[in-house]
Image (cartoon, rainbow, N blue to C red; front, side, top):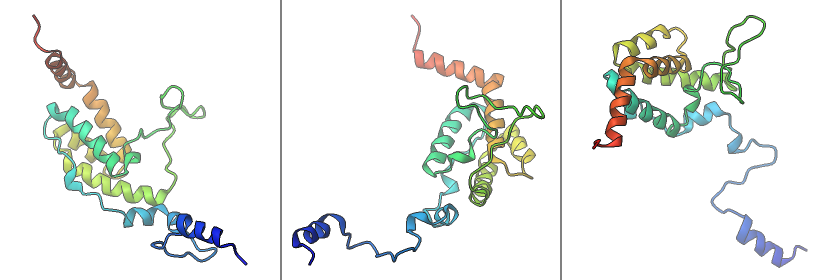
Length: 177
């Protein structure tokens, strides 16, 4: 006979009447593969992404896109396209051929699904001539990591970006006396 005290404890603290009972050796809902989970999740809306219309808008565009990517659980789409050293953060070079080692996703199917969707977003929101050129150069591979890497490299190292950063810095510091 099972003690009433233990049954009451189970009934009050562990038992969830709103959850379905899962038979033994059946895959739990949390174990469903990532691809199916992504498809079932709330669909990210591509219209939520800010459009890059001119070079001066790079910094707000970058912040907005990175925030939106995080909220859509797509951060892996803009990580560096190559393996990075965890200590230095620099790209790792393959000693055999002297080339950078490409980043390999854990789940190829999920990565392809996300990459295709996010590449469409980048195609829609990148409206400057340089950004369009970078996106079009990567159209065959749809490698969003490479696109984002090249966009960041260009805009963070361009003269107009550096001038705009200086303007923002002067504005943040306030008027000089």
